[in-house]
Image (cartoon, rainbow, N blue to C red; front, side, top):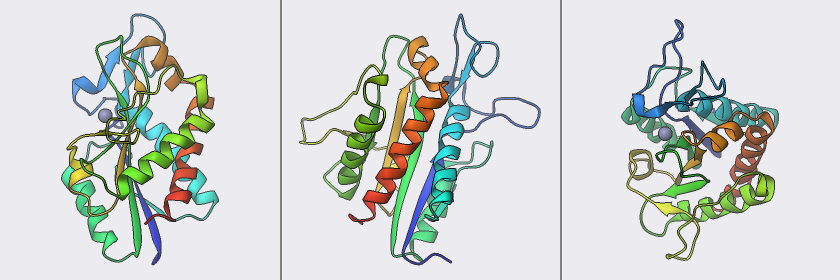
Length: 212
Ligand SMILES: [Zn+2]
């Protein structure tokens, strides 16, 4: 049993069940008029979230950095359960961190990368700032836009998302581009972009240990 550090990985929403049905709310998918994407033009956010999170997990495993996946392989497990699991293990481990992976939808014209933390100035903001810088460094101008809110002195946006406010440990929620924008969706299907987003996240997880 890990004692010093554990990162909880949360791939947002659900994905495809054994029969190939997308088991997530309709708002978490988009049918592009051209391109193949996950199936016949459909982009499934939950599938992307797992593709990325699985690369992060593989890298952490290679580095012997302890992680625990609180999302299911495909089922859309309740947020309550994901947070309960993390909070239970957090009582047994000295330092913990929660990272939730998503892609955004904004009506088609919105593009870019965002990080969210809970309102107020906490350790989560410091972790988010590390991640902002790592994504800038590793992904750079391969993506079109970094969407930030610097009115409170850092780059993250703040929202009362369940996994950010109900977790007992520092938590960030990352919105990897907009899957209902065609150009952003193409980037999200690009293995090198996924690899770079995952590498940035691993570096953040390593560096965040110094803040917890
Ligand atoms: Zn999402």
